[in-house]
Image 1: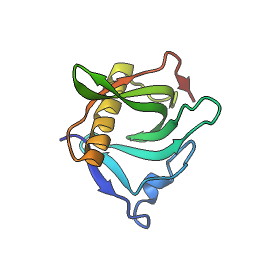
Image 2: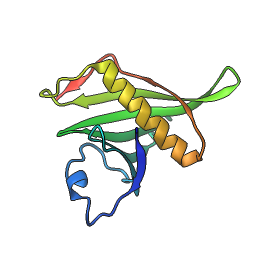
Image 3: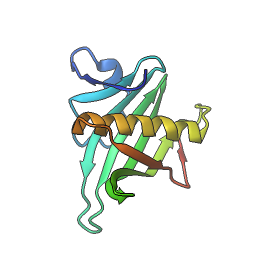
Image 4: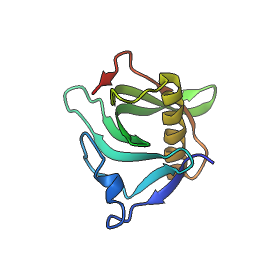
Length: 138
């Protein structure tokens, strides 16, 4: 079925909120859920850095019992006459206990990001996710 947008009921969602890790700039009212795979994708907000004018966005992918932290640089580029959302993962934190295939993880992030931006723009958004060379295993 894939990711679908849901609205936080902050009184009923402590099981999700208590698991969030990393900078929580401004947790958004909506999050994405893929109930069949036990995944939740939460947008934690964005920060612009004055020095390098390089905005960073923060997300968590809750997958089963694990929380994966994501710091990314999302941005639109023109590709073959169409807009493409390029989602550069600058840093990712994966629990050491989690056994995962990085390509499978990249695909899950790409699905979540496409669903998140498509819901925002109310139209399908072509998305490409790049993963960092270095992964933080915590």
